[in-house]
Image 1 (spheres, helix red, strand yellow):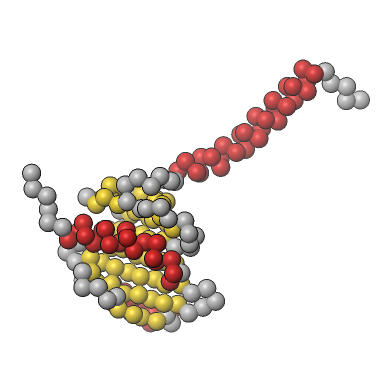
Image 2: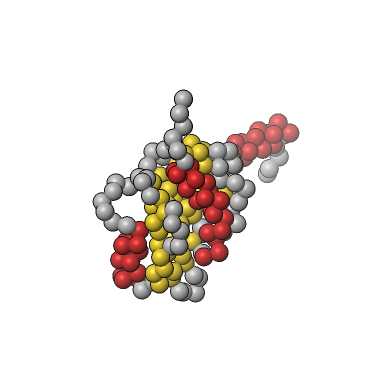
Length: 168
């Protein structure tokens, strides 16, 4: 009943290969949309070098999202925000008032920041930071241990924002 010639089997194999390839194209396309290299990224006059355990997952004019490869739930988002007088401490206090989290002020004189710790089966930490005299805000969301992957990036951003402007 299925007496195919060699040429028919060959064409059948090529057809199945093309079908499998077309199915995998959508997966390949989603991979190509993300930035996977560890090269430096220029964003709002900052040069951000993610490092070995951090990669850029999204980049546009108003936001830059970095993710940790060691903690899949950890992300650091840099975004621009107009100055409306609200400090990170005010925003996090308001959040903790609604969500029953623990408010902790960030102890760093170079930036205004606050931490919201959620106690649950999977601990969650939310850190909101605003370097002085800057329109750029930083937001960390993830497990408390995951923040360590982004410490070098945050430090580099703070140094760049406080550096005197280059003169030509």
